[in-house]
Length: 243
Image (tube, rainbow, N blue to C red; front, side, top):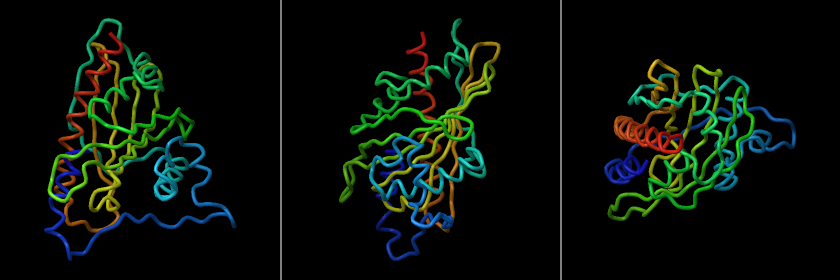
């Protein structure tokens, strides 16, 4: 996210005065006196890491996924593939690794490699046909004039498996302290499949848009590149912890 966040900050002066776009989810009906998404917030650990405002932004999205299945963007794009060739490596072992909640798991190593701080890594909890949790972290940004040195990032994960054939780690991410952060969600998934060589990894990325946005191309280009880079890094960490 650091490259995408930096570019958005750089472009901000060029689009001042233009129509800004905001991510707006339809209001959902709730029981009288009930907090929006309160039930989901209690089910998805970490969704409220950055307070009620962020938790309430996640709530209708997670509620929708709980009721209808973990759906991401309308279209996902494969940006990178890896072969995790190892004699003893299989999808079941990968799934077990992804369920880890300690500080040395492959997923935590991935973020630590980005020099993040304030990383929260809650336990998994059931959501739909899998498990969900949300990481909170502070990501350093490339130095730019008048730009913050870092941004808070909230990333929600959903882990599912069909047994010995494949395991999928889907994700949705919000950068909270950059321009136009409320205009979009970056989404994607890491798909691990059993094949003749061992386990293959395919990485996908997509975007949720609910209104016009002046910098769609920039967001798409930067997040494609960052997801491809993270895919290679993630594969490397999984090889290390399972070798």
